[in-house]
Image (cartoon, rainbow, N blue to C red; front, side, top):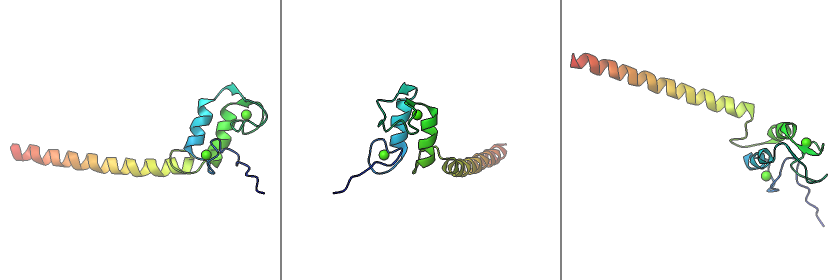
Length: 101
Ligand SMILES: [Ca+2]
Ligand SMILES: [Ca+2]
Protein backbone atom coordinates (compact mmCIF):
# COMPACT_ATOMS: atom_id res chain seq x y z
CA UNK A 1 0.00 0.00 0.00
CA UNK A 2 1.33 3.36 -1.00
CA UNK A 3 0.34 6.53 0.73
CA UNK A 4 0.96 9.59 -1.41
CA UNK A 5 1.85 12.59 0.67
CA UNK A 6 1.61 15.80 -1.31
CA UNK A 7 4.83 17.76 -1.26
CA UNK A 8 4.87 21.06 0.56
CA UNK A 9 3.38 23.73 -1.68
CA UNK A 10 1.58 21.33 -4.03
CA UNK A 11 -1.84 22.75 -3.26
CA UNK A 12 -3.78 21.21 -6.16
CA UNK A 13 -1.90 17.92 -5.57
CA UNK A 14 -0.87 17.37 -9.19
CA UNK A 15 2.63 16.26 -8.21
CA UNK A 16 4.48 19.50 -8.82
CA UNK A 17 4.71 22.95 -7.30
CA UNK A 18 4.06 25.47 -10.02
CA UNK A 19 2.21 28.67 -10.87
CA UNK A 20 -1.18 26.99 -10.44
CA UNK A 21 -0.41 26.34 -6.79
CA UNK A 22 0.89 29.87 -6.42
CA UNK A 23 -2.40 31.23 -7.77
CA UNK A 24 -4.43 29.07 -5.39
CA UNK A 25 -2.32 30.31 -2.51
CA UNK A 26 -2.40 33.99 -3.41
CA UNK A 27 -6.19 33.75 -3.88
CA UNK A 28 -6.42 32.72 -0.21
CA UNK A 29 -3.97 35.33 1.09
CA UNK A 30 -4.72 36.83 4.50
CA UNK A 31 -7.29 34.21 5.42
CA UNK A 32 -7.23 31.62 8.17
CA UNK A 33 -6.25 28.05 7.36
CA UNK A 34 -9.08 25.51 7.28
CA UNK A 35 -7.20 23.43 9.82
CA UNK A 36 -3.81 21.97 10.66
CA UNK A 37 -3.79 20.03 7.38
CA UNK A 38 -4.61 22.98 5.11
CA UNK A 39 -2.19 22.61 2.21
CA UNK A 40 -2.11 26.35 1.69
CA UNK A 41 -0.71 26.96 5.17
CA UNK A 42 2.85 25.97 4.29
CA UNK A 43 4.47 26.98 7.57
CA UNK A 44 1.59 25.67 9.65
CA UNK A 45 0.95 28.84 11.69
CA UNK A 46 -2.80 28.74 11.03
CA UNK A 47 -2.85 31.70 8.65
CA UNK A 48 -2.39 31.93 4.90
CA UNK A 49 -0.23 34.95 4.25
CA UNK A 50 2.92 36.27 2.59
CA UNK A 51 5.17 33.89 4.52
CA UNK A 52 3.42 30.92 2.95
CA UNK A 53 3.64 32.54 -0.49
CA UNK A 54 7.37 33.07 0.02
CA UNK A 55 7.81 29.42 0.96
CA UNK A 56 5.85 28.27 -2.09
CA UNK A 57 7.77 30.55 -4.46
CA UNK A 58 11.02 29.00 -3.23
CA UNK A 59 9.74 25.53 -4.15
CA UNK A 60 7.95 26.62 -7.29
CA UNK A 61 9.23 25.37 -10.64
CA UNK A 62 8.36 26.30 -14.20
CA UNK A 63 7.48 29.56 -15.94
CA UNK A 64 5.48 32.31 -14.28
CA UNK A 65 6.46 31.29 -10.78
CA UNK A 66 8.27 34.47 -9.82
CA UNK A 67 11.58 32.73 -9.18
CA UNK A 68 14.20 35.42 -9.28
CA UNK A 69 16.55 33.64 -11.70
CA UNK A 70 13.85 32.95 -14.27
CA UNK A 71 12.51 36.47 -14.19
CA UNK A 72 15.95 37.98 -14.58
CA UNK A 73 16.85 35.83 -17.58
CA UNK A 74 13.57 36.54 -19.35
CA UNK A 75 13.74 40.26 -18.64
CA UNK A 76 17.27 40.63 -19.95
CA UNK A 77 16.49 38.78 -23.17
CA UNK A 78 13.33 40.73 -23.90
CA UNK A 79 14.92 44.07 -23.10
CA UNK A 80 17.82 43.42 -25.44
CA UNK A 81 15.49 42.37 -28.26
CA UNK A 82 13.33 45.43 -27.80
CA UNK A 83 16.32 47.77 -27.74
CA UNK A 84 17.66 46.28 -30.97
CA UNK A 85 14.30 46.62 -32.70
CA UNK A 86 13.92 50.22 -31.55
CA UNK A 87 17.35 51.06 -32.88
CA UNK A 88 16.61 49.43 -36.25
CA UNK A 89 13.36 51.37 -36.55
CA UNK A 90 15.11 54.65 -35.73
CA UNK A 91 17.85 54.02 -38.30
CA UNK A 92 15.31 53.10 -40.96
CA UNK A 93 13.30 56.21 -40.18
CA UNK A 94 16.39 58.43 -40.46
CA UNK A 95 17.32 56.97 -43.83
CA UNK A 96 13.80 57.39 -45.19
CA UNK A 97 13.75 60.97 -43.97
CA UNK A 98 17.02 61.75 -45.73
CA UNK A 99 15.88 60.08 -48.98
CA UNK A 100 12.73 62.17 -49.04
CA UNK A 101 14.72 65.35 -48.60
CA1 LIG B 1 0.53 21.54 -8.00
CA1 LIG C 1 1.09 30.21 7.29
